[in-house]
Length: 399
Image 1 (cartoon, helix red, strand yellow):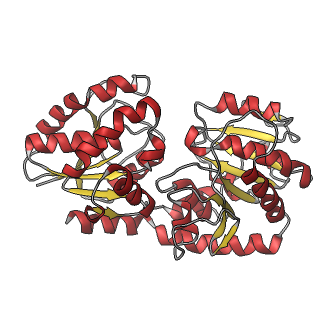
Image 2 (cartoon, one colour):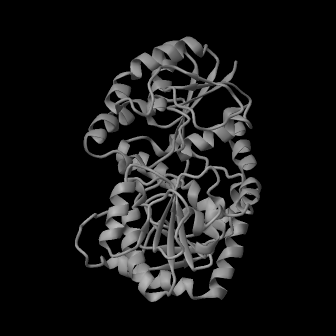
Image 3 (cartoon, helix red, strand yellow):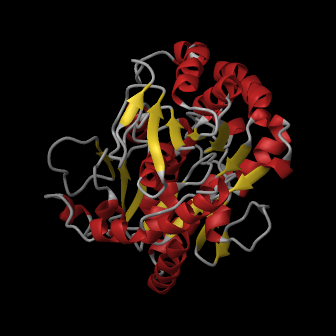
């Protein structure tokens, strides 16, 4: 009887990062990937179940679910436990278990009603509804994800356990103490607002650009740094220019006088966070946002959108899961109204964006409040130690 792990790939996302970290802390004997895509270091040697990769059409990969399941069933014997992360891997796990008899433990890492819309929703939502309830154990990484599965995918809430993501706080703090790359020190002599994560629809960074336009005018010398890469980079850079912001799009040494800096993907993004005055998090939906906990671990004060899953559980864990639509000071950071997601080209600031502008400018100028949030955030980050998450997984899995 062995524990085996399964995930779509080991690309650079948060789910992949979490599973790669847990692989070294759980007594797993194998790590299987649906795709041959590896960008995360892990204690186990990954075994791809196909030659698919990030360039393979999602339609092809969805159609290949039965093929993946047959291969997994041949590699996981009766009495084994397979723990899977992410939707396609979860469905493969359930199908393979019905064929080969292993115990299937599936973990949902995002809020699927936000993640899957349009054609993707038509394909994936029925599969989640059909196959998730057949798993032996279902785990969500936040209460918000659990609620979404129960309310929108007809999965019995009593069957869903919650294990929040873990964070290697000591490792992050050591990396955060490293110096910034050459040229960036001059940028960080200014009041910097930083964010990190993939440049994707879920993260809502176009709102941050629109918000920062007003902050730039209110706070002399303010700069915005976005650490990360993704399919929306070109759109975001063009939007920033249309908003009248001077843009550094990456490559070479950054100029000291740009308004918006696209720092790109960084093997070590943490100095870009730790040395900022404020971390801004504008996600439209989340599961459990690693980037937010990592910012707390870096000692940077945070303001975060109160989207449907994640930020409230991190910044205001004792509060009810509701939002007043107003800025809400919380024990570990500032919760802000959720953003609309609209990419309207209209130059007029949206109502929620106007509230963000005012609060961001106020925070940047309030050294005492920033210091309190910095100290509280460091303390809160310790609640998500990776070792604690691994212990909860071992208890759940019985290993």
